[in-house]
Length: 102
Image (tube, rainbow, N blue to C red):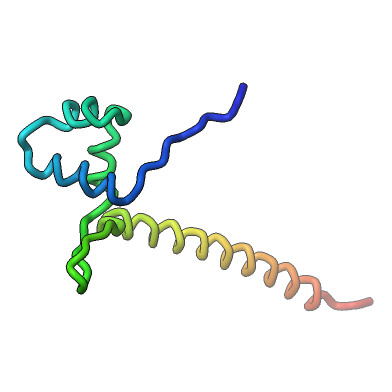
């Protein structure tokens, strides 16, 4: 089977879609149908991003606190796994070098 092609959306598009959702004049499903985006995507964006105002008055998207915490947990888990592997290698090395020779 062929590879799936995913649509990518600009940050500005996401900001405007999230602003429409924040007004709560329409449901997320209605907004998604009007914008032609995948059902459930708007709710995912709301959970994944937070709008942050910049010093120059502009607004941009950043990962939400929850998403940032999840990324940090993934990073720390990778680091723990790497350190455990290194520890096992060092244990084997100590075992090899500490053997008494006949």
